[in-house]
Length: 332
Image (cartoon, rainbow, N blue to C red; front, side, top):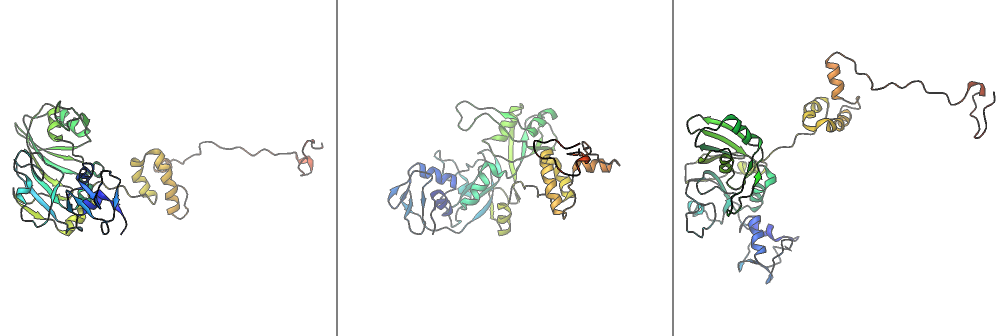
């Protein structure tokens, strides 16, 4: 079998997510054939090499398990807690395989949480570039103004907190925010495509409102459908849909109609390039031009940007139709 990166092998064996596996390697807790490996670029063959994590021999890939848990408030999203607080692993005992949380929910937050031993899927869902949408119900103290909510929709800079790990000043991506229950302390539905540390709480604090409750109700295509503290296993169809979660790239235009719809997305420069592709797809028809279509719709004929005059003759007709030789004047 071909050699693979160590973190990928560890994640496939269900020991930890790929990100956590990288930490295990850099901490010197992984050995290959008795030698400690601490470089992330190291590779190994899972069939030939003896790979150990914390002294335990790594076995082949385990059966993948995917769980959807309704996390109650007051549980830590981790495998173990040094402070002795209850963890989400206390809610999924007797599963039969070693699993771990995919992403996180704060101690005071509740709702949909995924757990799995599929390191590949966990790495895809938690990396920043995946942009898998996550939807939350949020109760805030006091009613923010519409101008303040617009700031959250367009992205807002959330500040850092001195002495708090992970609290760096960053600007959030645009978010979907809508009110679902108007009251003195209203409820909002917030959809994010990123997952910065305590992001929703910091966003509302930035506009002067404290968050009282947060409940995650959707994760990509999955919806929360179990009672608090309960969990269920995902169906194969749900797992396949989850692997395709995230924003979809627009289809490449193949003709004038497709090009018209994509012009707004591509911009002026992109539309000119797409116009050539549309002409080829239409069997060699004339090149499509958004500018020309607008003129045609308005009942006006598109005119060329300039008109070229008649081509000047290179020599006089009196020369008998012969081209003059170089360095000699034509006879008169």
